[in-house]
Length: 257
Image (cartoon, rainbow, N blue to C red; front, side, top):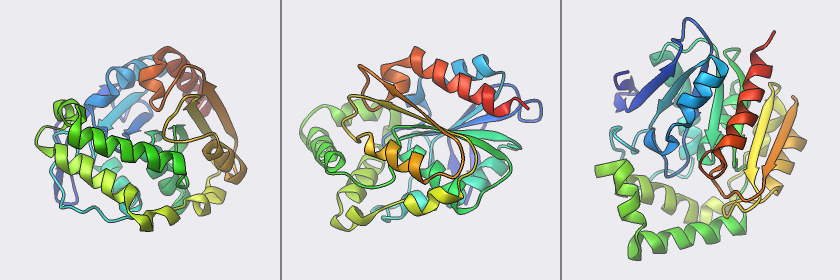
């Protein structure tokens, strides 16, 4: 599909499976260093397994989307959650399940908790964050060193092209800002009454199971968790078959009358 025009910016996007008028849509919200291409074949496979359509897009400043100025504000995830309805409208999405990874999962939580919408039927959240942990900060500091002195910039450039510095520094500097330590999304959880799936790797270097505990305790609706062994921060890349099975079963359950 063509780029989506949202808020005056062109957003890279692609579509898999059934059109929005024929079936519900899986809306993919990428991680802090992600974009359309970092999802690999997971959206297409999930669309095929569920009979849904799949909208995959890169937020502004990522992938082949229009750039944004730096620095990013510390409330950048709240801003992305606020613009999400415009993304859904631009893609003519009528009924959906949000599939979020890391920062994308946090954006889904803000969206679902701040302004619950009947078109959002469920949340499939991989490696979500609702507060800042010391483990997360230490890993993001290591990423900064790898970007400046190692091979990370070259690896990310394959996905982000000219946006690579905007994508990395916008994410990295916001998370490492001392003022970001107080960032917390737990206030949004009680308003989430739709079903939630939580998927996290046992070896996630960016968050602990305390994140899942907080979400499970805070949400008003049903929450199911899947913790995967031999899996790091990206379940859909580290354990694609198990993740596909878990998310597909959740989506089918959510959308079955």
